[in-house]
Each structure stands twice: as C-alpha cells, then as structure tokens.
Image 1 (tube, rainbow, N blue to C red):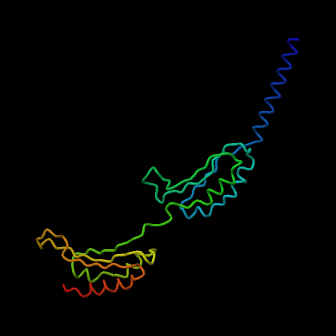
Image 2 (image 1 turned 120 degrees about the vertical axis):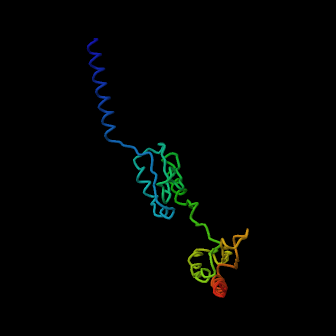
Image 3 (image 1 turned 180 degrees about the vertical axis):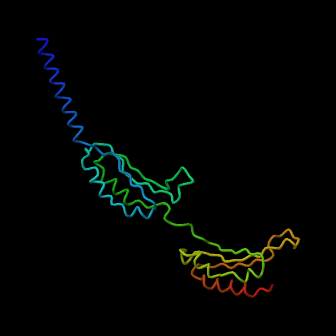
Length: 196
C-alpha cells in the first residue's frame, strides 16, 4: 500500500510539472507598452489602436501600463532626458478609455516662447548704420498679428569717454507684429541718418 501511494504521488507530480512546463511555453503576457518619441509633434504619429493588438492575449483583469515619453532635444548634458510623459495603469478591460485619454493628450510645450524685443547694441555710429533691420522679420517669425514687439538700438560709450553711463545713445519703437515692416522702416531711417 505504501508503494502504491508513492507511485500515485510520483505520477501526479510529474503530470503537474509537465502541465506547468507546457503552460509556460505557450503563454507569454505583455504588461507594459510605452512609446518613446523625439518630439511632441511625433505624438501625433502614434497609432494607439495597435495597443489593442499588443494586449490581445492578456486577460481582462490583468494590470497593464500604457503611455508615452517625449525625449528632450539634447540630453547628453543632463540626467533628466524626458521632457514630458504620461503613463496610465489599470486593467486590460479599460484599454479603450486609456487609448482615448492618450490620443487626446495636448502637449504642454507645443508653443515656443514668443520673442517680443530685438535691440541691437553696437560700439559706434558706423556699426549702427550697418545694422540689417530685415533680420527682424526672421527673428519675430511665428508671432501672432496682435503681439506687441519692440525694435531698438543702443550705442555704447567708449572707454575714453569718462562717464558712469555705459550707453551713449539709444532709440526704440514698438507696435504690433502686423506693423513690423513699418517699424523696420522707422529704425532703418533712424540708424542711417546718424552722423559719426
């Protein structure tokens, strides 16, 4: 009787081991899908519907992570190389909600900082006359029509001119971005009219 019980236990153990081994070979589960992109614009290229296929073999109650990371432009000089990210955790059953949230995400840093002033500082009247005011068009590119902008110039005082004031003369104009051409004409006329 003792031998029969030992044989039955041995057969049961081998059968359970074979089933466990077989199960491990057949089923691999994926629990995390995080896209890594180089810019906020690249977020638009992610096909979130592919995430459904990615998790199709997972049980509905299984916990997963899904999201994205946007890398900083140049991360060589910093340990923090992620500009922004969003990762959602939950059950596979909620994959549609996750996709809706992630695909509707609006990047935080889509707007560049708008430039509001361009002031040239030069050492002489001769340099003042050589300023190319057309550079302002490229400098302010991307501003909205009604954004206030400033154009200006300053001439430094030479070391020979003993004074506590470092600027000898300055001039500036301001207006809306839509009037930039007029501001450029005013500044160009002013700088060309200065006498050395």
